[in-house]
Length: 283
Image (cartoon, rainbow, N blue to C red; front, top):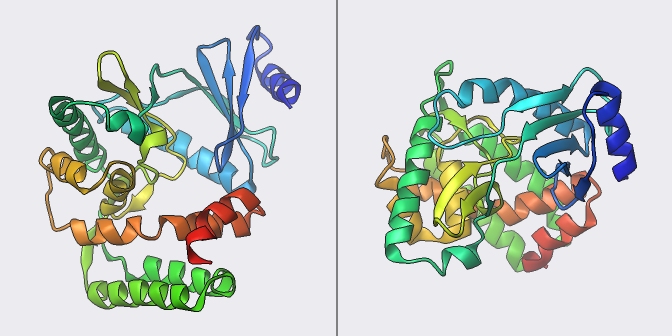
């Protein structure tokens, strides 16, 4: 597989001498290739991923003008085709390691406060990127997700788990039926794997993978932080966030849908590992 990716890169950029290539296939939507230890190439695994990569590439040029932490910016691109395995985007490597929960739990209160400042400020700036304003109801997006879960996942779930999921969604939908949310440019997958940090300096070094970026509910990005680091840290981050509307109830709801969304991804893309990981607590 690595030889295939090397061939595709050099077909577009023959002047790029590739002396070392490392493959990471654990991502849900993209295979990631590290070239010469200083470049990152992402190859979408699915047709939808191709569209997401094109959208991400267009968005990042504007995003990087506003945010306070390094983000990827593509300097190598092959976006003309729609063929999986040939579409890619390449970036300068952002130094750092994923800020896993295990690392978070080791750091001091002072470290957590500094990192909360970094992440809360980053989200403030990201959510302030100029867009065509949309003060829209979020009811329809959540309802659509609920229908997909009913149609594709309920048959694989315990009866009591189906009831719990129904209560989760129906209660939330009733509460937000008339709620108008100021939608923002969001990251869409703002969790530990996409937050890079320097374990020696104990600070965030960059934010990666904007493949799920969209105009959406800003609470969704805080849900990623909640799933990764817990409620107390989310509260710390919100202290540095510019628009502290009442987010927390929506944050908790979105976080409680993540496993279901992983199972949906698995069943819709024939990804057995993702499906099993997401559905296991509901069987």
